[in-house]
Length: 383
Image 1 (spheres, one colour):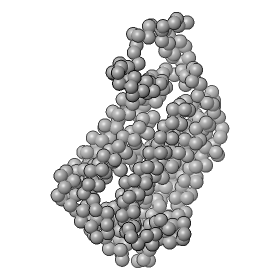
Image 2 (cartoon, one colour; image 1 turned 180 degrees about the vertical axis):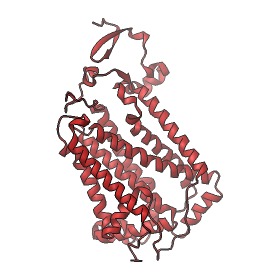
Image 3 (tube, helix red, strand yellow; image 1 turned 135 degrees about the vertical axis):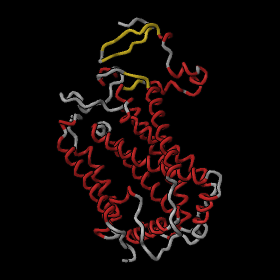
Image 4 (spheres, one colour; image 1 turned 30 degrees about the horizontal axis):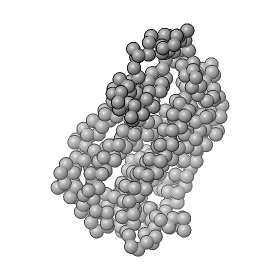
């Protein structure tokens, strides 16, 4: 039994006396006691299970690092961007050719967006495979889907802002969907207001509306992670059932050693720095593309690769595929925690939902491959 004045570290539920607490200062206190007290850094010293420090469990934090890179580079690019139909393409050309480090910063922004798409997708897959969406974490799964939708919104609006042929066609598809929605699509239509071009409003959505929504959902997401903790690892014996976190005995709850959250932050920051280094290397070797000025009378491009599956749906059923596809995509994902309500997280005990997940991912990959192997189609002009 630990005596007063000692700290207890548990391993597989067994207490181990570590000696007087003053010999093991909290990481935040050790860094700088004055700052730790005034900034509340002790809030970051709560323990997390050892498995949280693997790369698969750092993907969420790595994605956040990617968004920080996007924010910083985006602020810089916005200093040179003119969001009007007559000047947008010229300002992109200026950024690429004349602005100090403009081409490099724009390319880092581009590759950081690509990396965020990869890491957020892998994060979603990891949460699905580990069953971390199960009770009491269903709401956090839905919040995560909201963050995914906002990420897709960032990519779409960023594509439009290039205002090259790809960007002009992307905005034309936006207007076509607005027409299908009728009154519900008013904000997405150029008729919403004649005083501000639609491109300008897309720009403000990209730099203000979407970031505000993203920040709000992210804060709620992190709050729920703090409240419920990370989901325990799945066990074949089923002892990982749906239960709330036991804050009084975390080591017994997780069945593994505990580590301070600050160690998780350091590992996440390290992986994030690696992703940034890769983005810089790719930006240097492969600058961000910029197509020719847009001609709204033709359709000759495909969207960014992460939307190829949706482009294939549009090929198959027409412009309404841009409505049907995302609705089905997010509805099916939103149903996951309510369909798979069993107590087990171990893969071998969840064969049904795993098969469904494989079919879902296989369908997306098949649609993506279909777009990759077929020439661009005319969805709006019928050409």
